[in-house]
Image 1: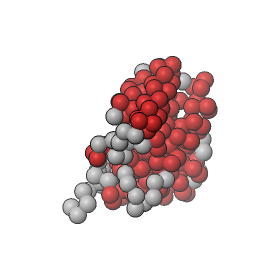
Image 2 (image 1 turned 45 degrees about the vertical axis):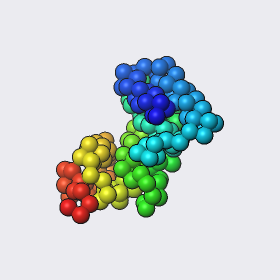
Image 3 (image 1 turned 90 degrees about the horizontal axis):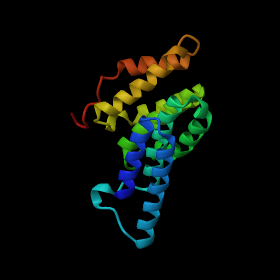
Length: 180
């Protein structure tokens, strides 16, 4: 749990544009996780999703935020973010945790969009959209809509982007709960 808290604290540092503190908290996160694994400590059931993959994805989110705030480091940060986000974003469609896979897939799309890789951004957006029926978080869906806004300037030149935006417009502003 302490590793999760350190990872989330890293997000706050990223939002503040503090790369040094973000990096220090990333190292702390990994140290805490390795220490817990070494001691054989298991996460409580409600936190079973807190794995190296999840903690990497959280760090990847922070790097996408930092890349926007620190243009001189953008290329390196986005490349690292893509590596850290990829595993969670590509969680099996029948696996858990789908909400995290959805959110981090949208973050991966944002990383690709910021890096100028339109094809990969679109692929990430479509993977996330395929998870939409199982997501009940309006905030998570808003992240996918943000990705759509990032891609919108390319719609005039890209029929694929235009199609994605059309699909996003057809979606409700928030996901409906399963069965409801």
